[in-house]
Length: 385
Image (cartoon, rainbow, N blue to C red; front, side, top):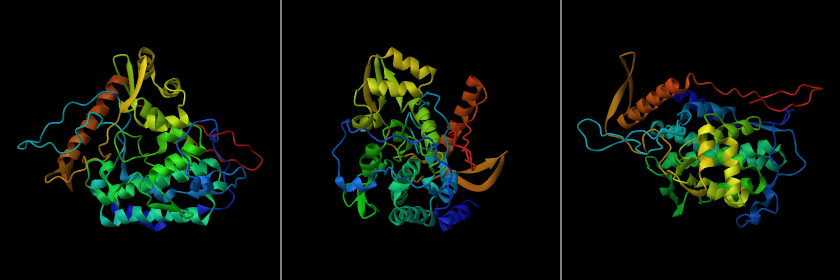
C-alpha cells in the first residue's frame, strides 16, 4: 500500500490552478534595503516579488500525500538528552543514531527508498522547475511564492540525499567536487542555482520575517524539521510558526553553558539578514517563541554564541545499512516486515520518551490549523492557528 500510494503521487505530480482563488493568508513584508546582507548576485533579481500580484495558486496535494508516508514525526522536544546508545547483544558495534539530539526533529525514511521512489522525487523537482518556467512566480501572492521556494529547496535536498544514501552526514555529498548545498543543480527561468542560493539570494533577500529560516530543511538533525505536509500559500505562515516554536524550544535550538546562551549555527547564517543588531535581535527573536523553560534560560544568560549543530542525517537508520534486522510485531504477533535494529532502538526510545512526557505533562494537545475560505462579499479575516 505504501508503494502504491507513493507511486500514485508521482503520477499526479504537480497541479497548478489558475482559476478563481482563495484570499491570501498573512503576508511577509519585503526586506529593508538598510539591512546589511551578503553579496548579491544580480542574476536573481528576476525572482524579486512584484507589487502587482495575481490570485493564482499552486496545488501541492500530490507532494503532501507523499510526505505523509516519507516523513516520520518525532514529536516535540522534551529538552532531555537520551541515555547513551548501547551495542546490540553479541556485538561491539553500535548501529543507528547515537547523537544526544537523536530524539529531536522529524525524519525521512531514506532506508525504505527504492529506485522508483528516488526517481519520483527527482521527477518532482524537475516538475517544480518547469512550473517556474511556465508561470511567473513573482506575480503570485507572496505566500505562494514563499511556499514554492521552500518546497523546491526541500525537494532538491531530499533528492540528492536519497541518491547518495547510505551516508552519515549530508554535508559529505558533492556534485562535481562541490558540496551539494552550494552546487548549482537547480534551474528556474534559465538561472542555475543551489539550495544555498535559494536561501540567500531569493528568500533571505526578499522576506524580512526571520521565521522563514524555519522552512528550510537541510537533511540534518541539527536543522529545522521537515514538515509532514507540503508548504502552501495558505498554510506557510502557520507551519513556519509551528516549526519555529519546536526548534527554539529544542536542545538543538537553544541551551546554555553557565552564563552563555548557546544557540544553533543556523542563526549565524541568517544573521546578516535578520539579526543585524547582534545579540539583541536574536535574543528578542528567540524570546518571542520560547516556552517558560527557555525564557528563563535566556533571561539568566548574559552572553550569546551560535555553536550548536548536529550534522548527522535526519533519517531513522543513522545513514547506515545494517546487516541485521528485527521482526516487527503487534500485540505479540510477528508481521512479515523487518526493520534495522538501530531503527527499532530509536523507535523504542521515542515511544518511551512520549510516554514519559505524557506522565510529566499530562495529555498532549494538538494544533489545529484552519484555512479560511473567502466567500463572495466577505473579507478574509486571516487564518486561525
